[in-house]
Length: 157
Image (cartoon, rainbow, N blue to C red; front, top):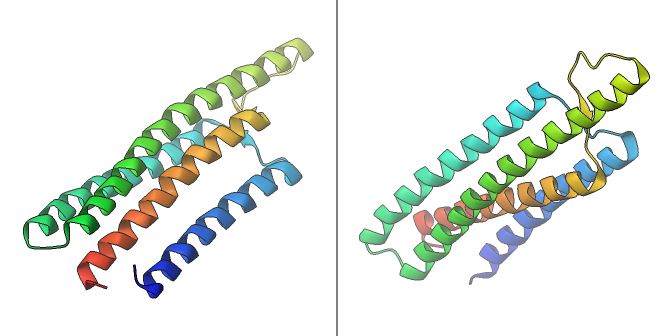
């Protein structure tokens, strides 16, 4: 592995990790853990785009594999993009279910207090937030790594 490529992978990993640490810190410090139907649907659409992009990239990689690209590079990129797809699906399942649980928990609390939960919002617990962010981090980081390998294949670095 060339030194420049290793630096790119390190920078990508640090950037993705930094984003998720910032997100987690904001959720803990500023109570940014509230979800509603619109925010849930937005994150699901973003993740759907990640899945579609990874699938298109895997198709491109299979084409690269037939035109003489190094097999190990194609293999690594495909594995990373498939891991991204798998964790994206896990993210959707975990996020949607935990968002429903958070809204139901908040609605139940509001009903006991005689209030209305018209906005259909709910607050995620620390455990829910950690699982959601872990699956999102795995999906996003493997997606970025897969595309870095795709770029390496295209440039033959």
